[in-house]
Length: 281
Image (tube, rainbow, N blue to C red):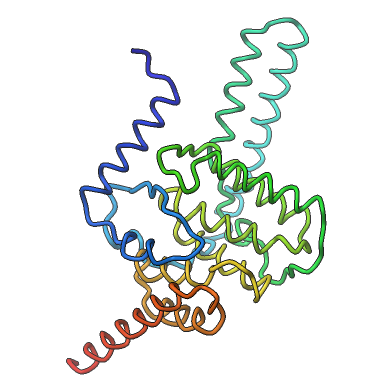
């Protein structure tokens, strides 16, 4: 049987499901208690140790890193531009097969998450404000949500990483093109969901996106604080930050009853553990 690109992707996805069912998956502790969130495939890094997921502050290493990143970005842009010109050339000159090759390679690039590597470039400023109704931004939000749905959001068996990456790109486009839109907090929340659930080893980016959602709109309708708290708690093992956010859930996200109940329980558990540790010192 010929192994197509789609077949390879499905084998990877179902392999991840088997692995996650056979091991101890902490995510299951809280997923069934969340409101307005859905189960999804978390692609595990089977070689990672627990320390690989500890909270880190991603800083610039030195000036050389900035130079390397800028150089890489320029080459990346040139590569995209070259492929597009090549495809156009083949189409104009009637080389249909080669035009398909170029189109296939361009399509493959859309399924790859292109990092910006420098946190200030990766995550927009927390000074934006979601306060203006902009129809074009609304349309981009709907487009991104549709891509997430078609990519398997809420239906793990239909998971397609390429569509999830495209969805993240559309949400990013919304934020960068319409930074005053009243939908930027929605876009940030969905970026957090994609980085948390569908792309491997990106917990640090996920919590940054969740944090932007409520920074841009303190009254955001999404359970961004709760989602960030859970990631800090179970994946990054930063219980102090998790405790702070669980308290914020009670104060700011009371509409999500089951999340609030979970936050109350975790606050009690984390606090008791802190007391026990302090008593033994």
